[in-house]
Image 1 (cartoon, rainbow, N blue to C red):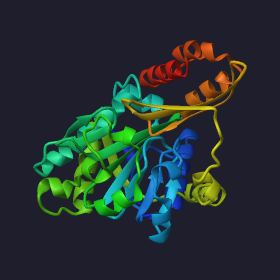
Image 2 (image 1 turned 180 degrees about the horizontal axis):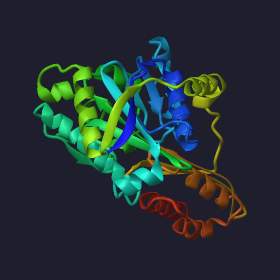
Image 3 (image 1 turned 90 degrees about the vertical axis):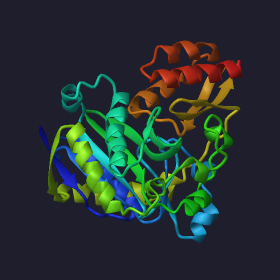
Length: 341
């Protein structure tokens, strides 16, 4: 068993909430923070994935009218609505040590391990749940839980969101996903796609009850010995700095969008992938990959994108094929390049 801090700091301000997430991840890489299981909740807010634009997935005007803050997460994935009826957790740890101990060969395997804890939690309340590739847990085909990951040098964070009593009407008003998102799911809107655990049970269950069960199953499956702790002073100082200099800035969430000659999208196992491309005389002058797909190592993606600038378009499939990107992302980008040709 390995000792992990159990952190429930109760920071509910969305921008500071994610500043803490990044501060802990950086502390993990710098070996100033021991492994952590952080339980977290925020006030009603919308969190977009790091590769998304709020105007494409969120009803910004409605959120402004209701004073629902919109914040860009540091991890990938899709836009989500959060309130006091849902909760999240984040596992911060040194990647090499923990992956070796749990015999994990590649990051995607952690989705299943952590997801098993969610399935066991649902079972405790008499509900049968199952995995939905690559990073969701569903009940009768409806999503009750989703997850995402970040690899940051030597550090790693795996995060998950669990719907217990979330206001699904408000969620549907805030989010405006593309039709492509549900094309293979048989759903037409957000509300029909998701489910609260309370609805599945048939009676209301409180969030702290679910947290207690999930923490137990996570600690058992991931072989963690937990002890309660608070944020360290250095973590608080860095979080406040990241809040002031990054997360509270409108330009972090509302990034300026570039114009491209070609924009094509597809649905992959890990989410929607959109390839934006500008060319001149058959060579790439600008490129962006956006969407709600998941990828742990964002640095790999940055390097690949940088390597494509100045290349002939016909060489892009070869470069992508030989890149360190996940297989589903490589295959999806290859299919999008065929559309361009």
